[in-house]
Image (tube, rainbow, N blue to C red; front, side, top):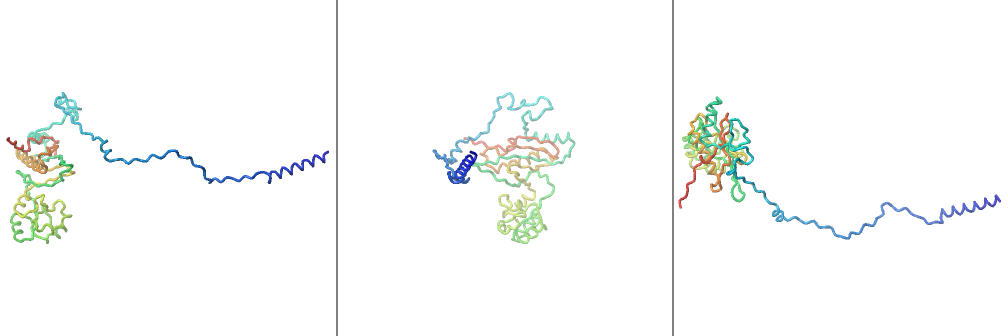
Length: 319
């Protein structure tokens, strides 16, 4: 009986080995890099629409500056009152006071007495200009020289004249030029051996002075500034005693106009000359050229003044 049982187990074990080795189906491993089926897209991608500049310009609405009319209000917009009641107050809570030009000059003289400051200190004017023109154009920053009716400088300006004509050079020296000559002056000027406050020239020699353009910069002779002309005595008369000012940072002018020891009438006359010359660089029909005007001395506070009583009024045309 035991022998039969062992024989049956041997037969069964042999059949199991045969089934496991070759009898069953073989399976191969699927590689990881096998291509998978992609999902089918049933719709098309939305095409990006190009922006139209005209549509964007139409949608953009420019914000206009809001102009607040305070004429009929009991107090200015955003302020406490029209004028302070006490002598001591916070300035930002009240509108700024605009003085008349003559009254502003009188205040500077009063400040000098109260503060015990030097009576011969310089007087400055600070202007902010509206440089806009028609069709989005602007006034180019300019340099100008004016002849003040009451000069405050005690010394004459040194003027150098460029000319190749010996007769014109002699006339220039007789009229007060510190130096006059032709191309022989170029190298000494480049070497800083010769210098002057102003440089003027006749039109014939101007193209030959190109090597001095980077050296002289703003002092280089230009017809717009009146430093290029045939009339040498007239140029010397202007630049020997003339006062020069320029536009800085695109729209600001800060220049000295007098000294505080001068009379109020003389200071006012010099101020009127400067403002009139400034306004001549922009057409009058475009409106006021000066947006802000301040007069001050070296040690006093700034006094804001109105320019309407300084500038000459345009004559009214009779119909």
